[in-house]
Image (cartoon, rainbow, N blue to C red; front, side):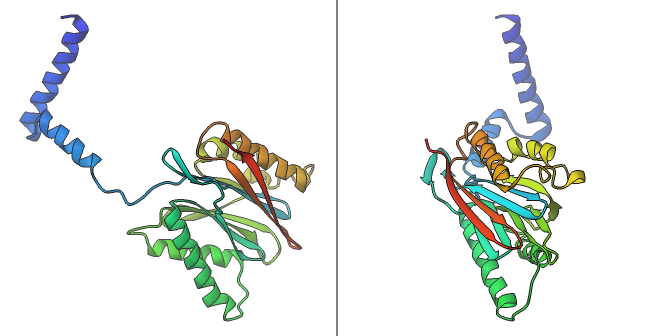
Amino acid sequence: MSFRNRRYSFVENYWELCSSKFFGFSQGNLRFFEKCSEMSFNPYQDNSGTIISISLGDYLIVASDTRFTMGYSIPDRSLNRIIKISDQIVLATAGMQSDIIALQDTIKERVELEFIGANINYTVEYCANFLSTILYSRRFFPYYTFNLLSGLNSESQPKIFSYDAIGSYEENNATCIGSGQKLLQPILDYCFPKECSGFFNGYRPLNEAIMVVKHFFLAISQRGTTTGDGLQIMVITKDAFLIENSFIKID
């Protein structure tokens, strides 16, 4: 027996001795516990999706891919993750698709009931607090969703709020959620720093900013299978609400 095999054998025997002496279970019990953890029920599933929201001076850009994945399968290539709450407010959601549908239906019904039906003029800041309340009310069995609420305030200034699953939120001027967040967020932080809001606004018009967003999604789609197919872009200004649908990569 070589020195390396003797060393590995010593480590295994030492762990077997310590676990049976101090913790009261053997290596066989450890394998049983591992099988039980593998068979445990998990109610959540991440169905991927990448969403970007960028504030540029006097307008907002919100973009999302349309690929819906379950593991290594792609059940749907034309999924819509962005809903329109008003002419100047949109909600984009990534995460588990069943929870996305439930949350978006809930907030549309509540907004229509509490604000539109009562003829109350609501702002994006009030909607941000309203969404946080809905998410926090489900904190013991939360929606497996990650949200971006984007819109213009009463002074026509763009606002972006990003959320975690239980309702904590913060204001950003350029942020990303979903499966491409780890790759894209550092680029957004470099291009759109908080201390210099509207970094591209001085020399990039709207069409060039949209091309930058398209290049972002194309780069992400080439580095993973969870982002791809279609691209939905919404542009919010004080005078218009624009929607553009295009393709990223079909494979």
